Structure formats: structure tokens, C-alpha cells
Image 1 (cartoon, one colour):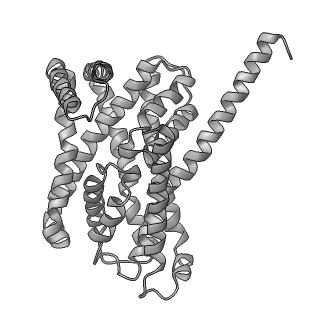
Image 2 (spheres, rainbow, N blue to C red):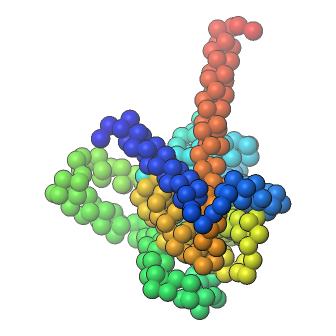
Image 3 (tube, helix red, strand yellow):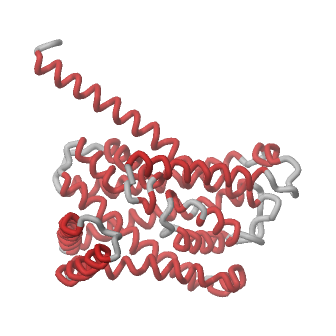
Length: 351
């Protein structure tokens, strides 16, 4: 499939997701005036939702900045934020978030960070985020297990499956560091199998790519393991960042004036929704996030407002990254073009 066709399909899925959410929000027959309900949102709580978006973005960027500064690179925090936003944008418009890390690494490369260290930065963020989301979701789940069973009922298996899939990445990450050769053999077997069933076209190329990725993971994790304080800093940034994303529902809930469900129960369901939907191989986990929200928050959020709550929640946890990301990508290209022009003028001896 050509790259342009893939991009068109991804953007088509994103647009379809937006259209579906708007349709759900405004077509509810129980809701008399959707625009009036949105206009009545309490500004302080809306500001809190934006704050959650900022915390999620900022601490993700901060963690990468801290790591690179620790490695001796003089990158500004603003440039780290720029690379983070570009990574978020491409993660949200490509299936399985496949484009996020490569584009983030490319952005860091333009900022003077070698590809190897840029890849390590993205790798460490992924590993720490996996540890953090698995640990925090399990803690909230165990502390509120009776509420979860009552709220989800026979749908709780979706959360169990989601947690198992997310947790599977944790031992795989550890094995990539301490059982490098075993993971290499497993990956080679999977690639050969893919070749036999015509899922892999270039076996040799796939092996080379996989080897390079495993080498990067191996080096990054071993390097991190030798510095326990750095591990704690990275995990702390991951926890705060993810709490920003997960905690948005608390502010959405109160922005509409809802009450009756305490903050820790709202966060518990939000954690379970995240782990249940994030592995869906569609841009921004489209479909799974929206459907999961309607399913998981049924009864917590009134039926005539749940579509609007979904729209506001999805805007700040997904659509806003697309909007800011587009602006950031364009601005990045403009700044690079200006910088190249200045360099050319300097070489040509022009003022």
C-alpha cells in the first residue's frame, strides 16, 4: 500500500471518528439543547481540563529533556516540547501509533540530537509509561474492585484483557535488556513465519530493522538500569504525565455539574478505559475509546449528557493534540526553512 494511501485512510478514520462523536453528542433525543448545555459548562473546571492536557504533554516532554541533558546535550525545554508535540501528533494519526516515535526522533535529530540518543529517549519513555500505567491501573483497580465489578459487571473482562495486553510489554521490555539473544531468536522466528504466510515481504530487511531496534532497546535499558535515580525521575514524570491524561475525566464530570461519584472512582474507570482501548490498532484508538467511554461511564454520567461529556473529554484528550500538532508541524517546517536560509546566506557571504 502506498504511503499516500495510508495517510488518506488514517485521516479518513480520524474524520469518521470526529463525525461519529459529534453525531452521538448532538443526536440524543433526550437532550433538548446541546449548545445550551455546552455553554453552561463551568469555566473553572474547563480550565482544569486544559490543565490536564498541559500536564500530560509537559511532563512527557520534561522527562525526555532531563534524559538528554543528563547525557550532555544542550537542548532547550522548548525544543523538547516541540519534539513531544510532533510525536503526539503522528501517534494520533497513524495506526497503532506507529509514526509517533520515528517522527519524534527525527525532530530531535533536527535539533542536533543523534538518532541513537533520540531513539533511546523515545524508548525510555515507552518503557517507563508501560510500567507506570500497569502499576497505577492495578492499584486503583484493587482499591476499588467492588465498585469496578458493580459498574462494569460482565464487561469487566475487557479491562482484564486490556491490562494483560499492556502488561505483556513489561516483561518483553525487560527481556530485551537482559535476554537480548532470546528475544532476537523469537523475533526471527516470527519474521520467518510472516514470510511463509505472506505477511512479510522482505525477510532480510525486517531482520535488520528488528535487530537495530532491539540493539537500541538493549543499550537504553541497560544504561538506565545503572542509574537508579534516573529511573525514579523518569517513572515520576511518567506517573504525573499519565495522571494528567487520566484525570481529565474528573474535570469533565464536574464541568457539567455532575455529582455523586468520588474522584478515585472516576479515575479508576478512566484507567481501565485507557488500558482497554489503547492497544487498538487504529489512529488514536478511534472507536474503542468512544465506545468504551459510553460503556464504562454508563450510569455514572446521565444518559442525556453522556454524548456531550464524550465530546468534551475526547476533544481535550485527542482532538486538541491534532490541532496543536498540526500547528507545531507547520511551525517546525517554517523555522527549519528560515534556519536553512540563514545558513545559506552566511555561506554566500550575504548580510
